[in-house]
Amino acid sequence: MEISGKLILITGASSGIGAASARMAAMHGADVILLARGLDGLNRVAAEIAVFGRKAYVFSVDLADPQATAITCERIKREVGVPDVIFNNAGVGRWLYVEETDSAELQQMIAVPYLAAFNVTRAFLPELLARNSGWIVNITSPVAFVAWPGATAYAAARWAIRGFSEALRADLYGTRIGVTLLVPGEVDSPYFDHNPGARARVPGIGRIYRTLSAEDVADMLFIALTREKHQLIRPRLLALSIWFARLFPGIVQWLTVRTGHRRSAL
Ligand SMILES: NC(=O)c1ccc[n+]([C@@H]2O[C@H](COP(=O)([O-])OP(=O)(O)OC[C@H]3O[C@@H](n4cnc5c(N)ncnc54)[C@H](OP(=O)(O)O)[C@@H]3O)[C@@H](O)[C@H]2O)c1
View 1 (cartoon, rainbow, N blue to C red):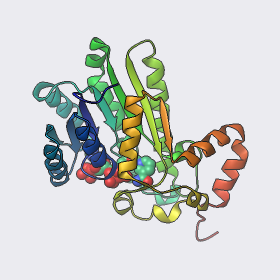
View 2: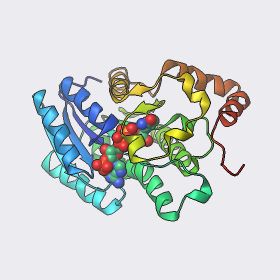
View 3: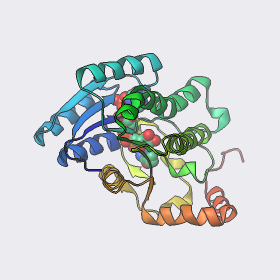
View 4: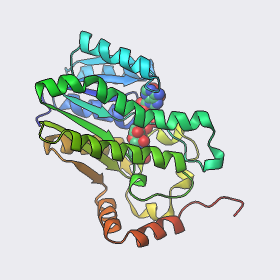
């Protein structure tokens, strides 16, 4: 798909990967619809987009609230139009063991990314189906392929994103609507400030992979869209490890758990 001239909706666009993706899209000639809660962050990104001479439409919404999400998506249709690309990127989640995770935080981790991605996609899918074109991109973590200790609800929510992406691709078989799953390794972004404690629980084996920047992930989005990829994993060594894990799941799982975090009491 050609990016230039497209309308690209990005959730979680107020910081990190979403903000970098919005800049990348505008640099390649797209207009962007930016969603997140923080209006200041969204307006900052919108001002950067203006430098590229493209339009940025800002919508502040709590994507954990399905009703607010539905109302915002209807407003977008009325005021801006139906996006050609939806990048479901918004996500939160501290890395916690089961006994450390209270119900409210558990709900939040499922609500954003998984339920938000589902709800935003559902809001626009009838129009995408009617014009038989579009692209939906979801982002997940390597934990959706090989689980590690100390991040249980986070891992389950990222597996949900992977399952949603594969099921959606199956649903859309035969249409001209594509689905991509982006899988970056560790990214140097405000994620770890927003979700404290997570970085300390990255398994030791994770140190062999290069840390990506938010711009690297924006490049992944560019590659995924322009080459119409179903799945893109970066860095390449991580992609190799995930393929290796398909052949020898026991070895990779063992290494990940063995070099992973331990409860202090154990
Ligand atoms: N950083 C990594 O190492 C890494 C690796 C693999 C995958 N990912 C995934 O990449 C995505 C983006 O993460 P990032 O690294 O760019 O982290 P980030 O800088 O913390 O960005 C998260 C974005 O999600 C938005 N968001 C969170 N809760 C929201 C809600 N309830 N409603 C609307 N927007 C909400 C935040 O905006 P507001 O707070 O303004 O609402 C922010 O724009 C996440 O889904 C993350 O799981 C990250």
